[in-house]
Length: 556
Image 1 (cartoon, helix red, strand yellow):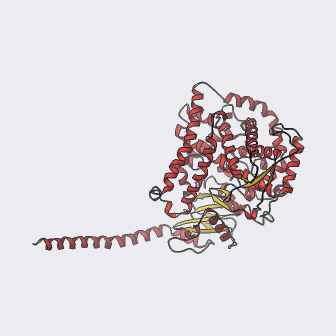
Image 2 (tube, one colour):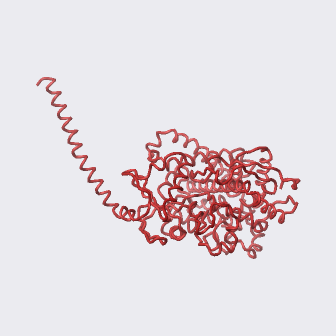
Image 3 (cartoon, helix red, strand yellow):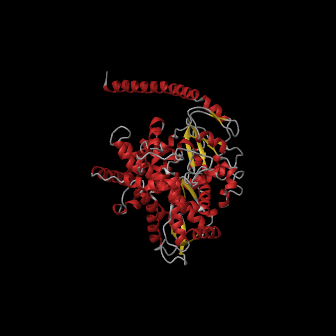
Protein backbone atom coordinates (compact mmCIF):
# COMPACT_ATOMS: atom_id res chain seq x y z
CA UNK A 1 0.00 0.00 0.00
CA UNK A 2 1.32 3.37 -0.98
CA UNK A 3 1.88 6.19 1.53
CA UNK A 4 -1.02 8.23 0.06
CA UNK A 5 -3.40 5.29 0.35
CA UNK A 6 -2.34 4.68 3.96
CA UNK A 7 -2.89 8.36 4.76
CA UNK A 8 -6.37 8.19 3.21
CA UNK A 9 -7.27 5.14 5.32
CA UNK A 10 -6.00 6.90 8.47
CA UNK A 11 -8.06 10.02 7.69
CA UNK A 12 -11.13 7.87 7.08
CA UNK A 13 -10.63 6.13 10.41
CA UNK A 14 -10.28 9.52 12.17
CA UNK A 15 -13.45 10.84 10.54
CA UNK A 16 -15.27 7.65 11.44
CA UNK A 17 -14.19 7.93 15.07
CA UNK A 18 -15.14 11.62 15.19
CA UNK A 19 -18.54 10.94 13.65
CA UNK A 20 -19.13 8.10 16.08
CA UNK A 21 -18.24 10.40 18.99
CA UNK A 22 -20.79 13.01 17.90
CA UNK A 23 -23.39 10.34 17.14
CA UNK A 24 -23.03 9.11 20.71
CA UNK A 25 -22.62 12.56 22.28
CA UNK A 26 -25.84 14.07 20.94
CA UNK A 27 -28.21 11.40 22.33
CA UNK A 28 -26.19 11.38 25.58
CA UNK A 29 -26.74 15.12 25.95
CA UNK A 30 -30.43 14.75 25.10
CA UNK A 31 -30.79 11.98 27.69
CA UNK A 32 -28.92 14.03 30.30
CA UNK A 33 -31.04 17.11 29.62
CA UNK A 34 -34.25 15.06 29.75
CA UNK A 35 -33.21 13.50 33.07
CA UNK A 36 -32.19 16.93 34.41
CA UNK A 37 -35.56 18.45 33.45
CA UNK A 38 -37.42 15.49 34.94
CA UNK A 39 -35.50 15.80 38.21
CA UNK A 40 -36.58 19.46 38.38
CA UNK A 41 -40.18 18.83 37.29
CA UNK A 42 -41.59 19.89 40.65
CA UNK A 43 -39.62 23.15 40.49
CA UNK A 44 -40.90 24.00 36.99
CA UNK A 45 -44.51 23.06 37.76
CA UNK A 46 -44.68 25.19 40.90
CA UNK A 47 -42.75 28.06 39.29
CA UNK A 48 -45.31 28.16 36.49
CA UNK A 49 -47.96 29.21 39.03
CA UNK A 50 -45.90 32.11 40.41
CA UNK A 51 -46.23 35.60 38.91
CA UNK A 52 -43.21 37.04 37.12
CA UNK A 53 -41.80 38.54 33.90
CA UNK A 54 -41.55 36.32 30.84
CA UNK A 55 -38.05 35.06 30.17
CA UNK A 56 -36.15 33.79 27.16
CA UNK A 57 -35.30 30.11 26.62
CA UNK A 58 -32.17 28.96 28.51
CA UNK A 59 -31.16 32.41 29.80
CA UNK A 60 -34.49 33.41 31.38
CA UNK A 61 -34.45 37.07 32.52
CA UNK A 62 -30.66 37.34 32.63
CA UNK A 63 -30.56 40.17 30.07
CA UNK A 64 -32.41 42.41 32.51
CA UNK A 65 -29.37 42.24 34.79
CA UNK A 66 -27.16 44.12 32.35
CA UNK A 67 -25.68 47.55 32.88
CA UNK A 68 -24.19 49.14 35.98
CA UNK A 69 -25.20 48.55 39.58
CA UNK A 70 -27.51 51.59 39.71
CA UNK A 71 -29.21 50.66 36.41
CA UNK A 72 -29.82 47.06 37.55
CA UNK A 73 -31.30 48.22 40.85
CA UNK A 74 -33.67 50.68 39.16
CA UNK A 75 -34.70 48.07 36.57
CA UNK A 76 -35.63 45.56 39.26
CA UNK A 77 -37.65 48.14 41.21
CA UNK A 78 -39.55 49.27 38.11
CA UNK A 79 -40.21 45.69 36.95
CA UNK A 80 -41.58 44.74 40.35
CA UNK A 81 -44.16 47.54 40.09
CA UNK A 82 -45.71 45.80 37.06
CA UNK A 83 -47.12 43.04 39.25
CA UNK A 84 -49.76 43.21 41.98
CA UNK A 85 -48.48 40.11 43.73
CA UNK A 86 -45.79 40.33 46.44
CA UNK A 87 -44.34 36.95 45.39
CA UNK A 88 -42.52 37.38 42.08
CA UNK A 89 -40.30 34.93 40.20
CA UNK A 90 -37.28 35.68 38.04
CA UNK A 91 -35.24 33.14 36.06
CA UNK A 92 -31.48 33.66 35.80
CA UNK A 93 -30.51 30.88 33.43
CA UNK A 94 -31.64 27.65 35.14
CA UNK A 95 -31.87 29.31 38.58
CA UNK A 96 -35.23 30.29 40.01
CA UNK A 97 -35.27 33.39 42.20
CA UNK A 98 -38.46 34.24 44.10
CA UNK A 99 -38.72 37.78 45.52
CA UNK A 100 -40.81 38.32 48.66
CA UNK A 101 -41.98 41.58 50.23
CA UNK A 102 -45.08 40.74 52.22
CA UNK A 103 -44.30 40.73 55.98
CA UNK A 104 -46.24 37.47 56.45
CA UNK A 105 -44.04 35.71 53.89
CA UNK A 106 -40.93 37.38 55.31
CA UNK A 107 -41.81 36.10 58.79
CA UNK A 108 -42.19 32.54 57.48
CA UNK A 109 -38.61 32.59 56.16
CA UNK A 110 -36.74 34.70 58.72
CA UNK A 111 -38.34 33.21 61.85
CA UNK A 112 -37.62 29.65 60.70
CA UNK A 113 -34.91 27.46 62.21
CA UNK A 114 -35.11 25.30 59.07
CA UNK A 115 -34.70 27.83 56.25
CA UNK A 116 -31.37 29.19 57.49
CA UNK A 117 -29.14 28.21 54.55
CA UNK A 118 -27.80 31.20 52.65
CA UNK A 119 -28.22 31.33 48.87
CA UNK A 120 -25.52 30.08 46.49
CA UNK A 121 -24.53 33.69 45.71
CA UNK A 122 -22.89 33.95 49.13
CA UNK A 123 -20.21 31.49 47.96
CA UNK A 124 -18.44 34.43 46.29
CA UNK A 125 -17.72 35.75 49.80
CA UNK A 126 -15.77 32.60 50.71
CA UNK A 127 -12.27 33.75 49.67
CA UNK A 128 -12.90 36.80 51.85
CA UNK A 129 -14.98 35.63 54.82
CA UNK A 130 -14.42 31.87 54.80
CA UNK A 131 -17.10 30.15 56.89
CA UNK A 132 -17.83 33.07 59.21
CA UNK A 133 -21.28 33.79 60.67
CA UNK A 134 -22.54 35.34 57.42
CA UNK A 135 -22.03 32.19 55.34
CA UNK A 136 -21.83 29.15 57.63
CA UNK A 137 -24.83 26.98 58.43
CA UNK A 138 -25.80 23.94 60.47
CA UNK A 139 -24.09 23.05 63.72
CA UNK A 140 -21.01 25.19 63.03
CA UNK A 141 -23.15 28.31 62.64
CA UNK A 142 -25.20 27.49 65.75
CA UNK A 143 -22.19 26.88 67.99
CA UNK A 144 -20.33 29.99 66.79
CA UNK A 145 -23.46 32.17 67.05
CA UNK A 146 -23.96 30.96 70.62
CA UNK A 147 -20.32 31.77 71.41
CA UNK A 148 -20.24 35.21 69.77
CA UNK A 149 -23.69 36.66 70.65
CA UNK A 150 -22.81 37.42 74.32
CA UNK A 151 -19.89 39.60 73.19
CA UNK A 152 -22.49 42.06 71.85
CA UNK A 153 -24.60 41.95 75.01
CA UNK A 154 -25.71 45.36 76.25
CA UNK A 155 -23.50 45.16 79.33
CA UNK A 156 -20.42 44.74 77.14
CA UNK A 157 -21.50 47.54 74.79
CA UNK A 158 -21.78 50.02 77.67
CA UNK A 159 -18.07 49.60 78.30
CA UNK A 160 -17.44 50.92 74.76
CA UNK A 161 -19.15 54.28 75.33
CA UNK A 162 -15.90 56.16 76.00
CA UNK A 163 -14.33 54.77 72.81
CA UNK A 164 -17.45 55.63 70.78
CA UNK A 165 -17.20 59.20 72.09
CA UNK A 166 -13.45 59.52 71.48
CA UNK A 167 -13.75 58.36 67.87
CA UNK A 168 -16.79 60.58 67.30
CA UNK A 169 -14.82 63.62 68.51
CA UNK A 170 -11.94 62.56 66.25
CA UNK A 171 -14.15 62.48 63.15
CA UNK A 172 -15.56 65.91 64.09
CA UNK A 173 -12.01 67.30 64.08
CA UNK A 174 -11.40 65.81 60.63
CA UNK A 175 -14.69 67.18 59.30
CA UNK A 176 -13.70 70.71 60.35
CA UNK A 177 -11.22 70.73 57.47
CA UNK A 178 -14.03 70.46 54.89
CA UNK A 179 -15.14 73.86 53.62
CA UNK A 180 -17.29 72.93 50.61
CA UNK A 181 -19.28 69.99 49.31
CA UNK A 182 -17.68 66.58 50.01
CA UNK A 183 -18.51 62.86 50.27
CA UNK A 184 -19.20 62.09 53.94
CA UNK A 185 -19.14 58.32 53.34
CA UNK A 186 -15.32 58.27 53.27
CA UNK A 187 -15.22 59.77 56.75
CA UNK A 188 -17.95 57.47 58.07
CA UNK A 189 -16.18 54.39 56.67
CA UNK A 190 -12.86 55.25 58.29
CA UNK A 191 -14.55 56.15 61.58
CA UNK A 192 -16.57 52.91 61.80
CA UNK A 193 -13.51 50.77 61.00
CA UNK A 194 -11.45 52.52 63.68
CA UNK A 195 -14.23 52.09 66.24
CA UNK A 196 -14.48 48.37 65.45
CA UNK A 197 -10.73 47.96 65.84
CA UNK A 198 -10.74 49.68 69.21
CA UNK A 199 -13.88 48.07 70.63
CA UNK A 200 -14.65 44.61 69.30
CA UNK A 201 -11.01 43.89 68.43
CA UNK A 202 -9.39 45.80 71.30
CA UNK A 203 -6.60 47.34 69.18
CA UNK A 204 -5.28 50.66 70.46
CA UNK A 205 -5.75 53.66 68.17
CA UNK A 206 -2.06 54.51 68.44
CA UNK A 207 -1.18 51.30 66.58
CA UNK A 208 -3.69 51.65 63.73
CA UNK A 209 -1.84 54.19 61.50
CA UNK A 210 -3.81 54.61 58.24
CA UNK A 211 -4.82 50.96 58.03
CA UNK A 212 -8.48 51.78 58.83
CA UNK A 213 -8.97 54.00 55.77
CA UNK A 214 -7.05 51.63 53.49
CA UNK A 215 -9.16 48.72 54.74
CA UNK A 216 -12.44 50.61 54.18
CA UNK A 217 -11.49 51.48 50.58
CA UNK A 218 -10.47 47.85 49.90
CA UNK A 219 -13.85 46.63 51.21
CA UNK A 220 -15.71 49.04 48.90
CA UNK A 221 -13.80 47.73 45.87
CA UNK A 222 -14.35 44.11 46.95
CA UNK A 223 -18.10 44.74 47.10
CA UNK A 224 -17.95 46.05 43.53
CA UNK A 225 -16.31 42.81 42.38
CA UNK A 226 -18.79 40.62 44.26
CA UNK A 227 -21.69 42.53 42.73
CA UNK A 228 -20.26 41.96 39.26
CA UNK A 229 -20.06 38.22 39.93
CA UNK A 230 -23.67 38.23 41.11
CA UNK A 231 -24.98 40.01 38.01
CA UNK A 232 -22.65 38.89 35.19
CA UNK A 233 -23.21 35.21 34.38
CA UNK A 234 -19.82 34.77 32.70
CA UNK A 235 -18.03 35.87 35.88
CA UNK A 236 -19.76 33.28 38.07
CA UNK A 237 -17.65 30.19 37.27
CA UNK A 238 -14.30 30.35 39.09
CA UNK A 239 -12.37 28.96 36.14
CA UNK A 240 -13.51 31.90 33.97
CA UNK A 241 -13.31 34.54 36.71
CA UNK A 242 -9.70 33.55 37.51
CA UNK A 243 -8.62 34.59 33.99
CA UNK A 244 -9.98 38.13 34.37
CA UNK A 245 -8.41 41.31 35.70
CA UNK A 246 -10.99 41.23 38.51
CA UNK A 247 -9.40 38.10 39.97
CA UNK A 248 -6.01 39.81 40.16
CA UNK A 249 -7.56 42.89 41.75
CA UNK A 250 -9.46 40.71 44.23
CA UNK A 251 -6.22 39.05 45.34
CA UNK A 252 -4.62 42.46 45.94
CA UNK A 253 -7.64 43.67 47.91
CA UNK A 254 -7.75 40.50 50.00
CA UNK A 255 -4.07 41.00 50.84
CA UNK A 256 -5.02 44.39 52.33
CA UNK A 257 -8.15 43.11 54.08
CA UNK A 258 -6.65 39.91 55.48
CA UNK A 259 -3.43 41.76 56.26
CA UNK A 260 -5.28 43.96 58.72
CA UNK A 261 -7.19 41.13 60.39
CA UNK A 262 -4.05 38.99 60.71
CA UNK A 263 -2.22 41.96 62.21
CA UNK A 264 -5.04 42.49 64.72
CA UNK A 265 -5.14 38.82 65.76
CA UNK A 266 -1.35 38.61 66.02
CA UNK A 267 -1.24 41.68 68.26
CA UNK A 268 -3.96 40.36 70.55
CA UNK A 269 -2.26 36.98 70.79
CA UNK A 270 0.98 38.67 71.83
CA UNK A 271 -0.93 40.56 74.52
CA UNK A 272 -2.41 37.31 75.80
CA UNK A 273 1.01 35.66 75.92
CA UNK A 274 2.45 38.61 77.82
CA UNK A 275 -0.28 38.21 80.43
CA UNK A 276 -2.27 41.33 79.51
CA UNK A 277 -5.96 40.71 80.18
CA UNK A 278 -8.20 43.54 78.94
CA UNK A 279 -11.24 41.50 80.00
CA UNK A 280 -10.75 42.62 83.62
CA UNK A 281 -11.43 46.22 82.59
CA UNK A 282 -14.58 45.22 80.75
CA UNK A 283 -15.80 43.23 83.74
CA UNK A 284 -15.18 46.15 86.11
CA UNK A 285 -17.12 48.58 83.93
CA UNK A 286 -19.96 46.13 83.44
CA UNK A 287 -20.35 45.64 87.19
CA UNK A 288 -20.84 49.40 87.61
CA UNK A 289 -23.39 49.63 84.82
CA UNK A 290 -25.41 46.48 85.46
CA UNK A 291 -27.69 47.70 88.26
CA UNK A 292 -29.09 50.88 86.64
CA UNK A 293 -29.68 49.01 83.37
CA UNK A 294 -32.29 46.80 85.05
CA UNK A 295 -34.54 49.81 85.73
CA UNK A 296 -34.31 51.29 82.23
CA UNK A 297 -36.43 50.28 79.26
CA UNK A 298 -34.00 49.57 76.44
CA UNK A 299 -35.92 47.10 74.30
CA UNK A 300 -37.50 47.13 70.88
CA UNK A 301 -36.93 49.98 68.47
CA UNK A 302 -34.10 51.38 70.58
CA UNK A 303 -31.98 48.71 68.99
CA UNK A 304 -33.15 48.47 65.42
CA UNK A 305 -36.12 46.11 65.26
CA UNK A 306 -39.83 45.96 66.04
CA UNK A 307 -40.64 45.88 69.74
CA UNK A 308 -42.36 42.49 69.49
CA UNK A 309 -39.34 40.71 68.03
CA UNK A 310 -36.89 38.93 70.30
CA UNK A 311 -33.63 37.12 69.57
CA UNK A 312 -30.53 35.92 71.41
CA UNK A 313 -29.40 39.54 71.93
CA UNK A 314 -32.48 40.28 74.04
CA UNK A 315 -31.64 38.06 77.00
CA UNK A 316 -32.69 39.62 80.30
CA UNK A 317 -30.39 37.65 82.57
CA UNK A 318 -26.85 38.83 83.18
CA UNK A 319 -24.22 36.92 81.25
CA UNK A 320 -21.46 35.14 83.12
CA UNK A 321 -18.14 36.80 83.80
CA UNK A 322 -16.33 34.76 81.14
CA UNK A 323 -18.84 35.72 78.46
CA UNK A 324 -18.55 39.42 79.30
CA UNK A 325 -15.35 39.58 77.30
CA UNK A 326 -15.23 41.69 74.16
CA UNK A 327 -15.45 39.88 70.81
CA UNK A 328 -11.82 39.04 69.99
CA UNK A 329 -10.84 38.51 73.63
CA UNK A 330 -13.50 35.83 73.98
CA UNK A 331 -12.54 34.08 70.74
CA UNK A 332 -8.87 33.92 71.70
CA UNK A 333 -9.60 32.74 75.21
CA UNK A 334 -11.90 30.03 73.85
CA UNK A 335 -9.22 28.95 71.38
CA UNK A 336 -6.57 28.47 74.06
CA UNK A 337 -8.13 25.09 74.84
CA UNK A 338 -8.21 24.32 71.11
CA UNK A 339 -11.69 22.81 71.40
CA UNK A 340 -14.31 25.48 70.76
CA UNK A 341 -12.80 27.42 67.84
CA UNK A 342 -9.64 27.09 65.73
CA UNK A 343 -7.21 29.84 64.66
CA UNK A 344 -8.58 29.73 61.11
CA UNK A 345 -12.14 30.04 62.38
CA UNK A 346 -11.13 33.03 64.52
CA UNK A 347 -9.75 34.73 61.41
CA UNK A 348 -12.99 34.01 59.51
CA UNK A 349 -15.14 35.46 62.28
CA UNK A 350 -12.92 38.55 62.61
CA UNK A 351 -13.13 39.13 58.84
CA UNK A 352 -16.93 38.75 58.99
CA UNK A 353 -17.48 41.12 61.91
CA UNK A 354 -15.07 43.69 60.43
CA UNK A 355 -17.03 43.72 57.16
CA UNK A 356 -20.56 43.54 58.56
CA UNK A 357 -19.79 45.91 61.41
CA UNK A 358 -18.37 48.78 59.39
CA UNK A 359 -19.83 48.91 55.88
CA UNK A 360 -23.48 48.76 56.93
CA UNK A 361 -23.14 51.46 59.60
CA UNK A 362 -21.03 53.64 57.30
CA UNK A 363 -23.83 53.53 54.72
CA UNK A 364 -26.55 54.05 57.34
CA UNK A 365 -24.84 57.08 58.89
CA UNK A 366 -24.16 58.59 55.44
CA UNK A 367 -27.81 58.25 54.42
CA UNK A 368 -28.82 59.80 57.77
CA UNK A 369 -26.60 62.85 57.24
CA UNK A 370 -27.93 63.19 53.68
CA UNK A 371 -31.52 63.10 54.98
CA UNK A 372 -30.73 65.72 57.64
CA UNK A 373 -29.20 67.92 54.95
CA UNK A 374 -32.38 67.69 52.87
CA UNK A 375 -34.92 68.13 55.67
CA UNK A 376 -33.82 71.20 57.57
CA UNK A 377 -37.03 71.28 59.65
CA UNK A 378 -36.41 67.73 60.86
CA UNK A 379 -32.77 68.56 61.59
CA UNK A 380 -34.02 71.49 63.71
CA UNK A 381 -36.05 69.08 65.85
CA UNK A 382 -33.09 66.72 66.29
CA UNK A 383 -30.86 69.63 67.34
CA UNK A 384 -33.55 70.89 69.71
CA UNK A 385 -33.68 67.47 71.36
CA UNK A 386 -29.88 67.33 71.65
CA UNK A 387 -29.83 70.82 73.17
CA UNK A 388 -32.41 69.73 75.74
CA UNK A 389 -30.16 66.79 76.69
CA UNK A 390 -26.76 68.51 76.63
CA UNK A 391 -27.53 72.24 76.81
CA UNK A 392 -24.38 74.25 76.04
CA UNK A 393 -22.22 71.51 77.54
CA UNK A 394 -19.51 69.87 75.46
CA UNK A 395 -19.53 66.75 77.64
CA UNK A 396 -19.46 63.31 75.95
CA UNK A 397 -22.67 61.31 75.62
CA UNK A 398 -23.57 58.71 78.23
CA UNK A 399 -25.64 55.56 77.76
CA UNK A 400 -28.56 57.27 79.49
CA UNK A 401 -28.26 60.17 77.02
CA UNK A 402 -28.69 57.76 74.10
CA UNK A 403 -31.95 56.50 75.62
CA UNK A 404 -33.26 60.08 75.68
CA UNK A 405 -32.50 60.65 71.97
CA UNK A 406 -36.03 59.60 71.02
CA UNK A 407 -36.45 61.86 67.98
CA UNK A 408 -32.96 61.20 66.66
CA UNK A 409 -33.73 57.50 67.04
CA UNK A 410 -36.93 57.85 65.02
CA UNK A 411 -34.97 59.69 62.31
CA UNK A 412 -32.41 56.90 62.29
CA UNK A 413 -35.17 54.27 62.02
CA UNK A 414 -36.76 56.17 59.16
CA UNK A 415 -33.39 56.29 57.43
CA UNK A 416 -33.04 52.51 57.83
CA UNK A 417 -36.58 52.08 56.53
CA UNK A 418 -36.08 54.11 53.37
CA UNK A 419 -32.47 53.07 52.78
CA UNK A 420 -31.86 49.66 54.43
CA UNK A 421 -28.09 48.99 54.27
CA UNK A 422 -28.79 45.37 53.25
CA UNK A 423 -31.48 45.76 50.55
CA UNK A 424 -31.97 42.01 49.98
CA UNK A 425 -31.63 38.83 52.07
CA UNK A 426 -31.34 35.54 50.17
CA UNK A 427 -32.00 32.00 51.40
CA UNK A 428 -31.82 28.61 49.67
CA UNK A 429 -34.91 26.42 50.09
CA UNK A 430 -34.52 22.70 50.75
CA UNK A 431 -38.26 22.01 50.85
CA UNK A 432 -41.45 23.39 49.32
CA UNK A 433 -43.14 26.12 51.35
CA UNK A 434 -46.55 27.75 51.01
CA UNK A 435 -46.65 31.53 51.14
CA UNK A 436 -49.24 32.90 53.62
CA UNK A 437 -49.89 36.01 51.48
CA UNK A 438 -51.32 34.18 48.45
CA UNK A 439 -51.31 30.43 49.19
CA UNK A 440 -48.83 29.69 46.38
CA UNK A 441 -46.04 27.15 46.86
CA UNK A 442 -42.42 28.11 46.36
CA UNK A 443 -40.47 24.99 45.34
CA UNK A 444 -37.45 23.39 46.94
CA UNK A 445 -34.24 24.23 45.07
CA UNK A 446 -35.24 27.85 44.50
CA UNK A 447 -33.68 30.93 46.08
CA UNK A 448 -36.04 33.17 48.02
CA UNK A 449 -35.00 36.82 48.14
CA UNK A 450 -36.49 39.05 50.81
CA UNK A 451 -36.60 42.46 49.15
CA UNK A 452 -36.09 44.63 52.25
CA UNK A 453 -36.11 47.82 50.18
CA UNK A 454 -39.55 46.98 48.72
CA UNK A 455 -40.89 45.64 52.03
CA UNK A 456 -40.02 48.92 53.77
CA UNK A 457 -41.85 50.94 51.09
CA UNK A 458 -45.22 49.17 51.09
CA UNK A 459 -47.91 51.85 50.90
CA UNK A 460 -50.38 49.75 52.89
CA UNK A 461 -47.93 49.72 55.81
CA UNK A 462 -46.17 53.09 55.48
CA UNK A 463 -48.46 55.82 54.08
CA UNK A 464 -46.65 57.94 51.50
CA UNK A 465 -43.66 55.56 51.72
CA UNK A 466 -41.25 57.65 49.62
CA UNK A 467 -41.50 60.58 52.03
CA UNK A 468 -39.00 60.85 54.89
CA UNK A 469 -41.25 60.87 57.96
CA UNK A 470 -39.76 60.02 61.40
CA UNK A 471 -43.30 59.86 62.82
CA UNK A 472 -43.63 56.46 61.13
CA UNK A 473 -41.88 55.21 64.27
CA UNK A 474 -44.03 56.85 66.90
CA UNK A 475 -44.97 54.14 69.44
CA UNK A 476 -48.65 54.28 68.54
CA UNK A 477 -47.90 53.78 64.83
CA UNK A 478 -45.44 50.96 65.42
CA UNK A 479 -47.76 49.12 67.82
CA UNK A 480 -50.20 47.85 65.17
CA UNK A 481 -47.59 47.19 62.49
CA UNK A 482 -46.56 43.65 61.57
CA UNK A 483 -43.35 42.75 63.39
CA UNK A 484 -41.65 41.74 60.15
CA UNK A 485 -42.60 44.93 58.28
CA UNK A 486 -39.33 46.51 59.46
CA UNK A 487 -36.22 44.31 59.31
CA UNK A 488 -33.14 46.49 58.58
CA UNK A 489 -30.96 44.06 60.57
CA UNK A 490 -32.81 40.96 59.35
CA UNK A 491 -34.71 39.12 62.12
CA UNK A 492 -35.14 35.71 63.69
CA UNK A 493 -32.33 33.24 64.46
CA UNK A 494 -30.02 34.74 61.79
CA UNK A 495 -30.60 38.37 62.73
CA UNK A 496 -27.57 40.66 62.75
CA UNK A 497 -25.54 39.84 65.85
CA UNK A 498 -24.26 43.42 66.01
CA UNK A 499 -27.52 45.37 65.72
CA UNK A 500 -27.41 46.75 69.30
CA UNK A 501 -23.74 47.62 68.83
CA UNK A 502 -24.58 49.40 65.56
CA UNK A 503 -27.47 51.41 66.98
CA UNK A 504 -25.54 52.59 70.04
CA UNK A 505 -22.52 53.51 67.92
CA UNK A 506 -24.64 55.38 65.36
CA UNK A 507 -26.46 57.39 68.01
CA UNK A 508 -23.21 58.62 69.52
CA UNK A 509 -21.47 59.38 66.20
CA UNK A 510 -24.45 61.19 64.67
CA UNK A 511 -25.40 63.12 67.80
CA UNK A 512 -21.78 64.30 68.15
CA UNK A 513 -21.70 65.49 64.53
CA UNK A 514 -25.03 67.33 64.84
CA UNK A 515 -23.93 68.99 68.09
CA UNK A 516 -21.07 70.52 66.13
CA UNK A 517 -22.35 71.07 62.58
CA UNK A 518 -25.35 72.08 60.55
CA UNK A 519 -25.71 69.69 57.58
CA UNK A 520 -26.86 70.77 54.11
CA UNK A 521 -27.57 68.85 50.90
CA UNK A 522 -28.25 70.20 47.42
CA UNK A 523 -30.00 67.00 46.30
CA UNK A 524 -33.39 65.51 47.22
CA UNK A 525 -34.10 61.83 47.85
CA UNK A 526 -35.64 61.61 44.36
CA UNK A 527 -32.24 62.61 42.93
CA UNK A 528 -30.42 59.70 44.62
CA UNK A 529 -29.02 57.10 42.21
CA UNK A 530 -29.23 54.06 44.44
CA UNK A 531 -27.08 51.02 43.80
CA UNK A 532 -27.09 47.73 45.64
CA UNK A 533 -23.56 46.39 45.31
CA UNK A 534 -24.00 44.15 48.39
CA UNK A 535 -24.65 47.23 50.58
CA UNK A 536 -27.13 49.93 49.49
CA UNK A 537 -25.28 53.11 48.53
CA UNK A 538 -25.52 56.17 46.30
CA UNK A 539 -23.79 55.91 42.94
CA UNK A 540 -23.02 59.65 42.96
CA UNK A 541 -21.62 59.53 46.49
CA UNK A 542 -22.99 61.06 49.70
CA UNK A 543 -22.36 64.74 48.98
CA UNK A 544 -23.12 67.16 51.84
CA UNK A 545 -21.93 70.54 53.14
CA UNK A 546 -21.25 71.37 56.78
CA UNK A 547 -21.48 74.62 58.68
CA UNK A 548 -20.18 74.91 62.27
CA UNK A 549 -22.94 75.47 64.79
CA UNK A 550 -22.46 78.97 66.18
CA UNK A 551 -23.80 78.26 69.62
CA UNK A 552 -21.20 75.57 70.24
CA UNK A 553 -17.91 77.21 71.11
CA UNK A 554 -15.92 74.02 71.56
CA UNK A 555 -15.85 70.58 69.99
CA UNK A 556 -18.19 68.13 71.68
